[in-house]
Length: 289
Image (cartoon, rainbow, N blue to C red; front, side, top):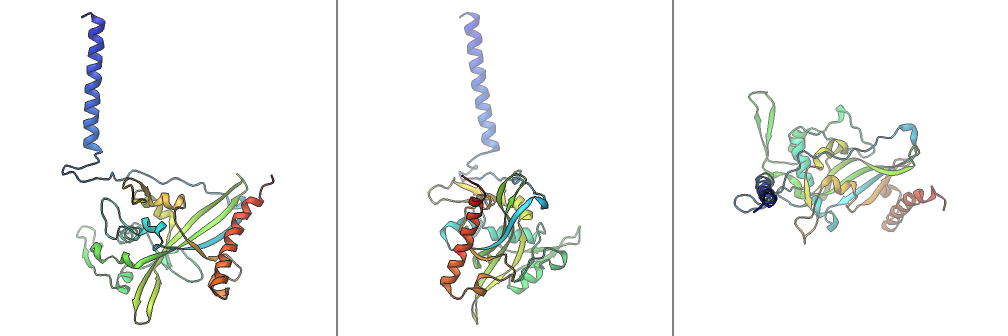
C-alpha cells in the first residue's frame, strides 16, 4: 500500500467517525423519540415572530377596521380548538392564553360592545374572571416574593366552552411602498355556556395581538389528520390567514354591527359579502392594466 492510498483511507475513516459522532450528538440533543420510544416534539422556545414594518401615520392612504368571528366548530379552525387537553407538546389556543394570563405574562382588557381600550384602567381582573365563571382553583403565596400564585388543574380550564373568537384587524394601504396589507390588532375569546336563560355568549377580554405573538410562534398545532408531522405555529395560522371567519362589523360612522342595521339573515349575508368584495376591489382599483 502506497502512502497516497493510506492517507485516502485514513481520511475516509475519519469522515465516517465524524458523521457517526455527529449523528450520535444530534440524536441526544434533538431526538424524535425519547428513551422509551414516545415522540418528543422539539419546543420552539428560541423562535421569535417575524417583525412587521410599522408604517408612518402620514403614509396610510386608506384604512378600514374589520371585526371577524372565528367559529372553532368549523373544521378549518380545529387547529385552534384541539387538543382539549395538552398532549405531545400541543395545547389549544385558549389554554395557552389562559396560562399566560395566569402567569402574568400577558394582559387582557375588558370587552365593551362599542370600543376597545387597551389602558391600565380597563385591565381584566384574572381573579374576578375565575370567580365569575366558577373556575376551580387555589391560591398560594410565594414566600420569596409574597406574590399570589394561582394553582389551576388543566381539566378545570373552561377551554371546551370557548368555541368562538372575535378578531379585530385593520386593512390599510401604505403609499410609501404601495403596499396593501392587513394587521391583526386584538383577539377576544368568546365563552358559550348553557344557563337558565338558555345558551349565553360571554366575550371574555381583548388581548392585544402583538403581545401574544412571541408565545404564539413558540407553540405549534397539528393541521392535518393524515400527517402528524404537519405542524404550524399559531402565529403562522394567523399570519398566513389559515382560518375561517365571517365579518360581523366594519368601521362606520355610527359604529354599528351588521346585525344592528341588517333586517334579516339574508341581508346580513349580503352585507358581509359586500364588505368583503369592497376590500378586494380596492386593491384591484389601485392599478391600471
